[in-house]
Image (cartoon, rainbow, N blue to C red; front, top):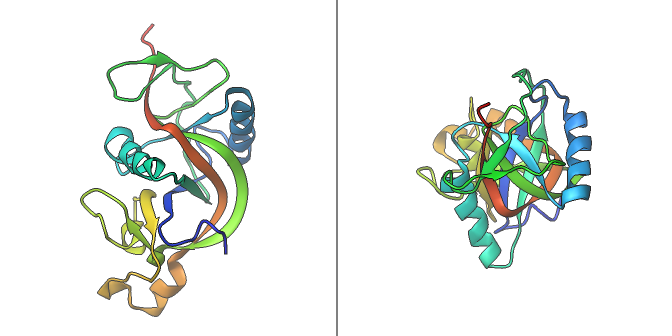
Length: 200
């Protein structure tokens, strides 16, 4: 079991795969180069469950103030994300002040991006029943009931004991609640940003 799966650890769980017509292996190679050149990379994403300013930033800041890291734990899967690979031109921490994205950082076909460092392969099973949603309207809910359907990412905290809802107390849920993690990174200040293209 990875040392990440320790009570109190903060993680951002995310399903990953092909994105903007680029395979996961190619994305990993490109992001590794970006980190080597710039110290960080932007890992693009979309959806509403991990909003940069309302969710990811306060979550990561709370851990940073305690001297702890938040780990991006990625679950590789088959994906059919074939959006046009348009490179974002600018990023913003607050959606108001915008800066040009460094030339060596390329984030494609995304609305938001996580700011990451120390990207590496790490193989372990993450028991979602031993996690809980860290903030928001579903705060305290077990990860195993939250990560379902179209929900493919969440800010979670590792708990010491399994958290189950009544509907999860079945043999099927016990088999399905563990997710295999194949890739890990650490969130770096400012943790998550908005992205946009310059209208030309």
